[in-house]
Length: 371
Image 1 (cartoon, one colour):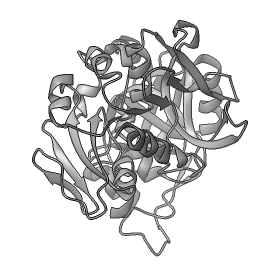
Image 2 (cartoon, one colour):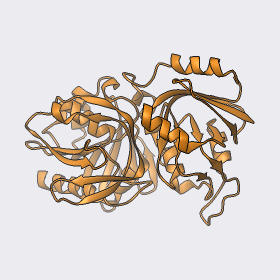
Image 3 (cartoon, rainbow, N blue to C red):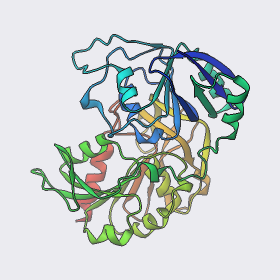
Image 4 (cartoon, rainbow, N blue to C red):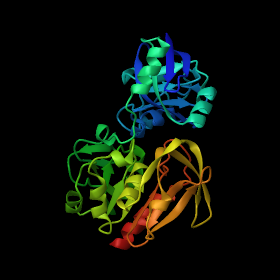
């Protein structure tokens, strides 16, 4: 089934749907990971976006229940060079096309993804419409230009949990309160801005009893739970557009140790009094080099973000701890007075390398020191 991909700059590409009829409107981005497409698809940070994979063969190892990073698929479409309809892997439980259909997400193949990636790198992430239904090029380009975009919009409200829940090795446990964990050492409140399951899995493996709370939870409500630490998760969209969250996080500074990842890092930067800005085409993939300025060590990291904290906007109490070696953008920071630190990348991998797992131990150490 023929599909057209129309970008706001007037570029129109032709492909074919491998999931049936459909349409999608959003921001087009690319991911450089060679594997991990299921984790990418179930990452809430991709809400409002259409993802193109730079690796040409997608679908070859299928889909399985273990690699879910949330309970849904969040990109509006997946664009690939060549879809592999016959998966071969001992863990495979189904086909990628069936998985996308289950969540009503459009899959399109036969695209020159190298050309599309070069275009995004040159012109930046753009608005796009993909359709099998409207094949009028001028109409699609016009519709792409009319889409509102992601800047200034609260995308977190679309993915955050509606009610609190606990997390154990068996998965989510409905209801407020910290679940009992056999290895329990610390109680952690995790703000859900679009949280990935592997962040919760790793906190639990480190001996934490985790209570996940909605993004709108107030500082007073969090402190009433008497946690040992506070975790700020990843999430989609513009951090400056998230309604009512920044002041809550500002009120928690100095009260308990805080660890932020990705959007949580950006929100922490805004709570410090800093500002954020939109990157030209963002960092998305499992091969991004980051330098730890404290040790000189270079980590290969998993990343997915389109916004960044402006280091020049931060006060003297904030220390830059990590930078991206591709563009020198800020990748990590810590507060010199309060027990708070954060990174822009994803130390929980899923997918990606495990180089930054030590950051979860650093969070544990902060909670130990605070007791």
